[in-house]
Length: 512
Image (cartoon, rainbow, N blue to C red; front, side, top):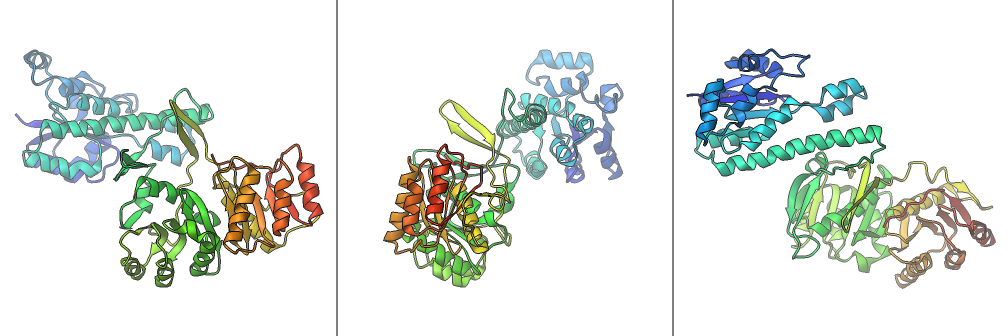
């Protein structure tokens, strides 16, 4: 008796070839709607679903596969005589393979805001069939991904269609329906509950295992939203570790945060230790390295552009663990080949690419906290409120913008000093803003860096004037901070006393 496959797909890529192979391997094809039409037009013999259900598709296609002849055919147990007898008595024939992918809900919500259209693109029969076939994986193959067609045909043709094989596809199937329902629930909560419903679902697709987690005794893996890493992360040399990926994240966000500017960020343990924007990337790297070459040793470098031979040779002068760029030329890769431990990654684009996730979350013991992602608005610095007598020049405003954006992506409490479009000092992760300011200046002095005329940014308000006093004694000329302290007047008075320009953005950018 011929085996039967039920095929009903929204994504019809490869379906004709897949069904052609199934027919060659002795399967009868049952199909629905557009899939049935496409198969018949391609010359593949197929049985329309209502011949099996003995009931017409109805309610504008809302009901077509929700039927005991379909679900009975999928779900009855082949290893139980009572099930086989009942199937015979009811006229239910076995369905041995189910190939279903679901109505394109994601594409619909990206295409339209029309709620009626969105509701119609919630699949009901599809997930029901997927779940039924997955439950009865003992006897049924469930296929939900176009990319799996070749592997399924290979298993059928080469006696690899084992229970273990089908169990793997069962797991994929439940992941598929869980992700689909999660997307719908999250969308509805975003639309009607400001994104904070009774449940919050975070779904990622596995990209790769990391060698381990933060430490060798921990397992680790990278998951992606949509296909961000699949499309924008190519390994050229080495293997990205859990810690590398975390450090890369911080460096890339900063380097890519200035549009098409030739920006280079050097980071260590997720925080910037060097940053500059210059006419060329080589100049930008050279200036970024001056801020803290000690910390840069073994660090991560994010380059907002293409790494060429000249830049690669300059980078090769010290030990760097990771370089990520828009592109790294083959010739530059040859330069890096001499260093065994360096890891190279590129995004395959002229500049670094950000996913710009709209949401952010962090694990805490027993759960996670979830929030809108923090984004520095394009005009936050431009629209900042001048509260001092002195104003900054256009070049100084650029320094303020750089300092402000870098501070927003640096662990609190932090302060960032920028001079001539290069970071010259940074203090981060301190319990006191005064300590952050003083630590930054102490390090700049040790590095022989002159901060005279620099711009200073703080990601939160200065609670006391002592940070302004310390900045003034170092020669800082321009300051930007959110403002909002009960002592703002003291800060403003201090700035005026020292002839500084002082701007309040009125937006705080903590990073904890």
